[in-house]
Length: 143
Image (cartoon, rainbow, N blue to C red; front, side, top):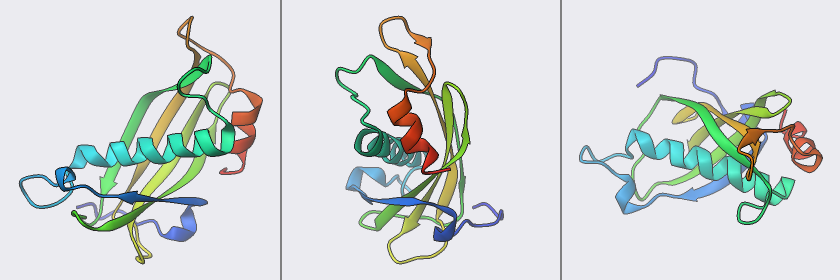
């Protein structure tokens, strides 16, 4: 587990509950490291869909993950109730870097935290494009 400063809830703007699943646990009895990236993806995309109007099924613009990283501070395990905290650390022309942390319900310090980068692309051409205004406005609220 990382000895780095553990972020607290005060470091994040929006929180989403996430249900851990039996299959999230690994042979060591805690949530496997790769599963945290699924939690990050879930939180970021939920925000984009609910707050920015991202149409993941039929929209012409989509967000591709191009970079991610995570530091682990304390184990979590099924059936822990957890929440993902999300913020924007950097907002570029066609990309955004989120800061995301995973918290056990009721705990102030993060069990894990990291970053997650989306580049927005035009689906048909598969080329980066400026972040559409509704998404940009939603992301600015997290900065």
